[in-house]
Length: 465
Image 1 (cartoon, rainbow, N blue to C red):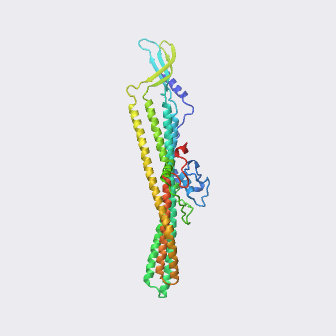
Image 2: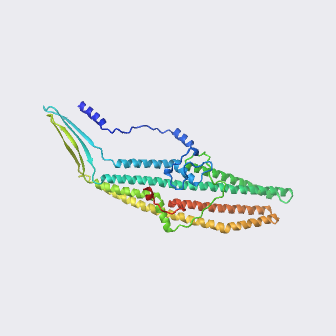
Image 3: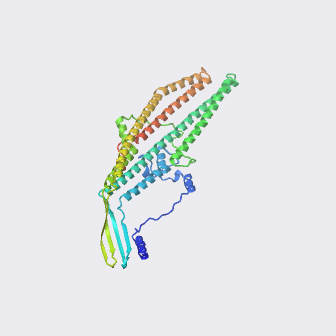
């Protein structure tokens, strides 16, 4: 008996595949992970173009010293953001499942040893190696279900990339807006500082009272407070931007466009049909749900095939008590008499219906969000048009009149300060309108998954293939 067991152990080692994987421990070290995050530097980053979701991303090796523009920031975020690493790891898991689905079942080795009893001499030995034969269509259904799962995970990962793209663009816009607000507040501080100097000179000449000087000093202090809050807000926006890019909070990120006027590109309006086309072509969440539905279809198909018997076949060896030996064919047949798979079929059919309903619900939700985003774009554009056509011309004319009246000493310095402050507030209102329009455009492009500067020509499914 011991010799037989020893022989089986040797046999199991011999038949093991030569390329068996070995376990290698990889412990998680929080200190090393933290050191890697803290040591990230854009000068040593190589942008991985295999994961870029935007076609206008910059080539590898862009210049960091010039500051990052929008496309460069998107490229960095898609390369470094840790959350995307999790989604891409899921792609590897789905690919591994796809490999497993295409494999045939392993053979089952059976050995029986029965010593003779009741005076019988010798030992009866039985051995067989049975290979389970898959039912017709079973392997194909498993492979297609695993492929659909891989497509679903891949599409979901790309959807997460597009979501991050929108967040990075919005956050960069927030930083640029905060920078322009600081410029306007600095202008207001400088304006009140100049007025205070004028009033102090007039007080020395007896042309202004202490009340006017005190009022300007109070306004100047308030302007300094507003400026400090705005600078703190810019620092906060930069911290959030660093987080989205996958950079350390303390990293001195250079942003192109800081200190420059905010540029606004006005796009043509999008009709209902074009909006639907952009939505279907651009939202990878829909592609992921489509893949999930294909998976549900194949799982239902697999459940139907599994209600039929399964056959196993292979060689069989037997050594009789008298020493004679025989070699033949062994068969096994699984008869689903008690369990005909009706429960699995019902669950698979219900899962398919649920996935269908999920797709319809998602499409309805995304379409409503896209229409809402378009409404915000239209409203923001109308405000920008009103500011440009009505407010800014009146502002320029009013500034000229007040400037001429102040030089002619027809108004006091207090009136002139009030007029200048109104001008600053008007420019701030135009800046806010421009920022809202750019933010609405980014929101619309994120809601449809398509840039307004391009036409919807490639669907997620086609692009993935």
